[in-house]
Image 1 (cartoon, rainbow, N blue to C red):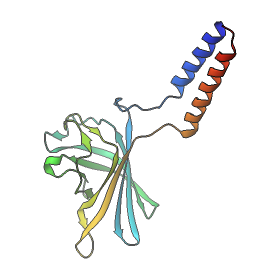
Image 2 (image 1 turned 180 degrees about the vertical axis):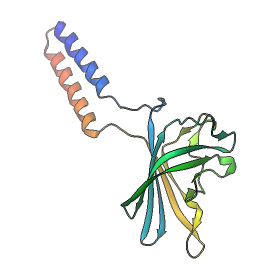
Image 3 (image 1 turned 60 degrees about the vertical axis):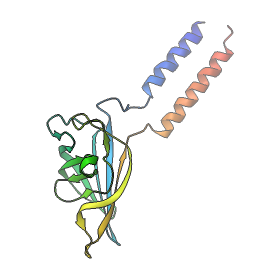
Image 4 (image 1 turned 120 degrees about the horizontal axis):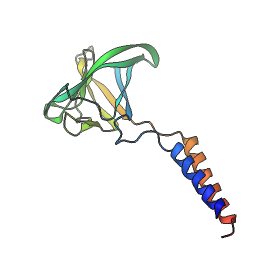
Length: 180
């Protein structure tokens, strides 16, 4: 009896230690944003930044229009090579004004739905891939540049999940061997 209680306690502690580090309902959870744009047949721009899954927009929103996030570190990559990091501002727009987002001056994503749910005063980003066009730039011939935004939520490591499964199996086998 004592051994099964000990094994169960150890398993519960390990499960809590190795559980997914971020829950969507937690305001400290962060999402990773990856904006990609094909500038020309041989040039691809990628911009990566992170924001809370439910950002504080209490001072930077307009109901029915959208909300802004300012002073966000964003890393730029040209053809996969690091080009630098700068602080940026992002304006996320509601469906009423076309959806998508715009950065401070350089690029944006149009032709997509809004990338968040909830009111502008308390938004939550929706993970997924949004494909549209750059709403601020055009190709040299005046056409639209295809662009996409991927919002992803960090997940626990595959090896960590595998280890947790093996520990659960070992605990079950250890409990089965203990006479009742």
